[in-house]
Length: 379
Image (tube, rainbow, N blue to C red):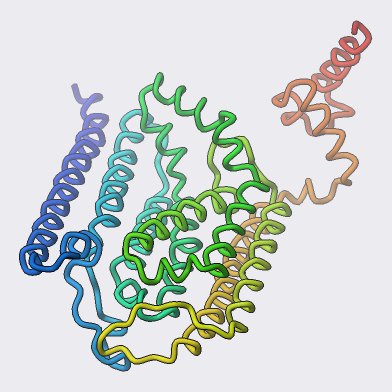
């Protein structure tokens, strides 16, 4: 009995975490429902009341731009908050389940913090001040774009949600998830050229066409825009900062190159916006008086400098991580030696090659090489 007791306590604690997480998520959803219902009752006479209650409940009049509301204004976007709350509950529950199913594995706290921070960034981009003003100010709209297509996806992917989903699942379901994640559908979606093209189409296609006028003026189109930006950002950054069990596992130089190409897309889009002769179509808001053309140019500057700044920050993190993890022994070997080892590992046994300090002297590696040659002779 005494030997079993220590093993039960962590399991009981994790189950308590699951219960507490579920109750908090349920309470948040109930509160959100009451908030939306209250806003709907207060504005039921308006023909846009239902849409406003679901997407902009709780918002206050914009007021003077130079006032504090430019930073403190808020709204309740229920359509965005519901999935964000459910994702937070799922992640915390999965961390607890992963600990129950794999007692020897301790999920890093940094990953949990990163994922939750990504959800908070998405919540602010849809409910914070930049969301309140995103139809009246293109600058606010652009700030929301950067948060949803770059900052939030990078933080979410750094939380390794796919790997966590596998660890938290029963064996059969985990095997099924691994097949799906490593399958051809996910492989095509996360193929580096496809991810880069998707990112380029989203950035260029939504900012330099008439679509942006629609997004600025139509609340429901803006909701779709938020979702598309978040998904495109996740598709791109899963290759850059992710360590998920997908087919594409890029080396450091390939990640740097993808980031550099994305920065070029941001720079091009920002410069074009700064040179536009016509402003982006914005929705007039009482109390907000702004030079729309100047605001459009400022939004382009935010895309250029803000987008490149975020990408550069990710690049710095990647370089520092690479420098910290680089193997001095591998760095001293020539590229030809590394190529020979990679070729032998591909055609024989990875375990044999990885365990060999010198593939020319190791007997196991030598036997594996001879078996490979014998197989070639028999063809």
